[in-house]
Image (cartoon, rainbow, N blue to C red; front, top):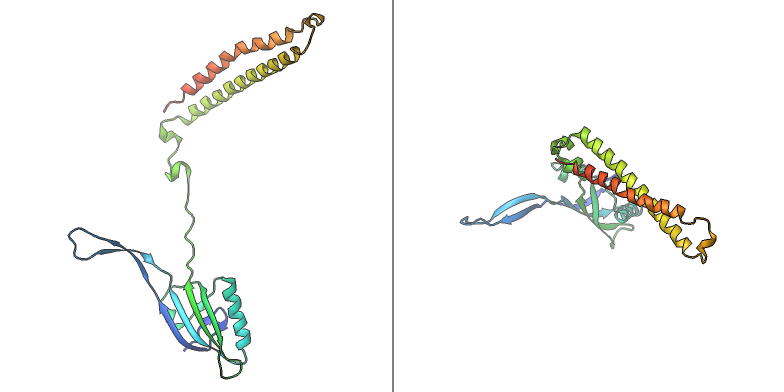
Length: 220
């Protein structure tokens, strides 16, 4: 009989091997049905329980390897006749126990529980518009070319609005500076730049109206 192995470690003195599989079901009661319908949800991970001895000569080294594998929690490869019909790629050591027994010097008893660690499913593929395949902007009733023109016009109008707002803010700052002067008569026409900036505010209505018109053109 082939010797059970965990990675490259041979377990030569295995005394007990137990394999366990369990399915997951959801009970679905049905009116008028005698009994309960069980809907299968899949299965739980395969489990393998091993009991045996680490023999003198290599017991110390083998014990160290098993302790390291158990502590790291990394996936391991397990091979044995009892798992021949099972599709198991990787397992993890869920539990490891070691016991020094009275008997031959260096002989160590162990108890190992291995649990299947299946690979993760592929990541979900997310595409535009919630993964609707070839669904595009045109399917919403928009002409992509016309939409691009409208968006460009909106961008231009928004730029004009921001320019007018910047001019207004400059006017407010200049007004604040003038308010601190005690004698305006000593300044040659100090309000001329302010009047020019405030006059720009009157032009704000034109780009705002253009922006509103451009937004109204976006119709499905």
